[in-house]
Length: 194
Image 1 (cartoon, rainbow, N blue to C red):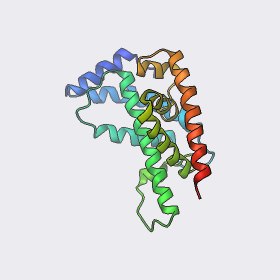
Image 2: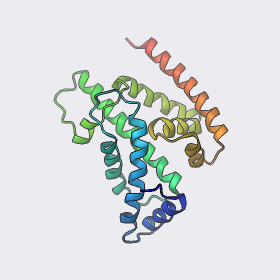
Image 3: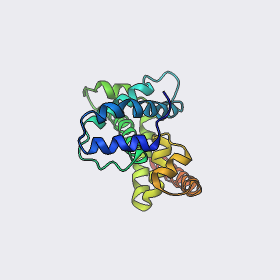
Image 4: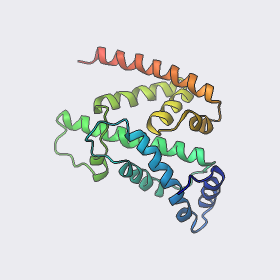
């Protein structure tokens, strides 16, 4: 299936937002393939032998999207930015639950979706990254969005620029500065942990 045009996806998003019957059914195959492509790109960075497949990550995102109501979808780029945030939440929520269990969290039940979400990044590091990213967001929201879109959403520099409505050069500058800030932040946390 060819990659749908930005205009086509945006039209179906607007129709879905307006409550048009059938818009979601027409939109789903268009965005599902693109989400799988983005998830595969993200999952390519994961450790060998993990149990999460790109399809499972996309399915979890899709299940959460179905429950989303009242979002004023702006365009295709906005839709994929929201999906990147969902991917981040799915992965960090799972990492937090694994960290809790490793610290004697008892026999808490883990949902099927959580059991599938395993990242190359150790759970403690993914949680620390999420915490650092939240701190960066308080200081410079755009730089945090760049990291979220590129790392968790798997978007290219050009796609990230489209979402944020800035130039690719600005994205690259933000990406470099954010990586340096996060590296410094994460290095400091590791030095202070017991």
